[in-house]
Length: 377
Ligand SMILES: *Cc1c(COP(=O)(O)O)cnc(C)c1O
Image (tube, rainbow, N blue to C red; front, top):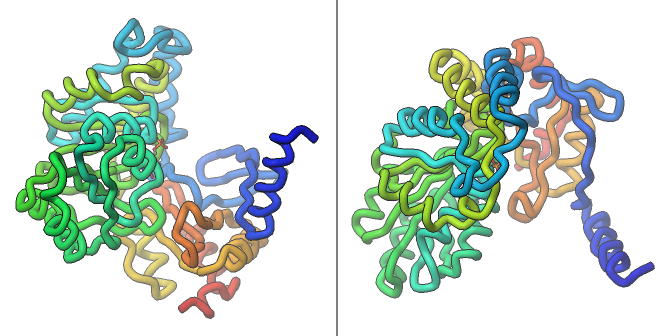
């Protein structure tokens, strides 16, 4: 076996032994049903919180744009890839966030990877919540700025770090998820904004799981970013903020400058999805209400978003619980390190406006029957 393959095989063996190996499965979807390896499940692992991925208006909009504008953008946006389907999408995003302007990137990951290194460099410092999404950590490392982590949602710790370290650097950026992707809880944005004012720092919030689900007083945060791949059901990332910030990012965010624009179909579908999101607020309310119903029924802390974690500890326990639910026709994927910290493997339940009451009742029953909550502690 060639040396490279040996290396890969050894690394995979180690992951396997720790129950941390990941494998791809083909997942074919229809609404909240997902088909894997010939079996159908009700999925509680999809981020399509509002059921917009399969919405007829969203699909029709994408199809028309592809027929009109072609399958791809053909070049980066700064060359010839800035097709006419971008402007309406960006205008809608800016309006939704009460911001002056918006800029769409290839994905949420690419947005963070472009924005953070454009804002700060080795002369600067980033203060990030312990549980921010992996792509914020990657972006912070890429920027070369000093990275300090504060305990999850702990404003006393953030204040202490700012007090001790702010003066050592030129610019400071405080960054957090708005809704935490694996915990579903919400960051104290007003307190973060107040600390930022006190210590002369910029603020950035990742709204990947908040858009369309958890509304906020947006004005206090300098830089909002998010994704069009979750509640909006399509694909792409975005940042909203002042016109000057957007003009600056067009010139400095490398993942924007050196990557091909999104396909017209993608932008048109995302724009249609945002329109439905605004027109039908009952979808957002339902996703939240279902999450609340389940946390109430199971005696868990009240859901603050469409995400509900069931903490189980070891990867083995998380996998066992996921398998138990699968026997009941329910898909709730086990989340293990490095996606979450050591010792906090879990089931992550994601609720959608498209889930039926019967499906949610079945979930509650299956979780109770699995016994996975009995030994939690
Ligand atoms: C999913 C996610 C991203 C990445 O967005 P993509 O569009 O999927 O690349 C960024 N931040 C958070 C918090 C996320 O959950």
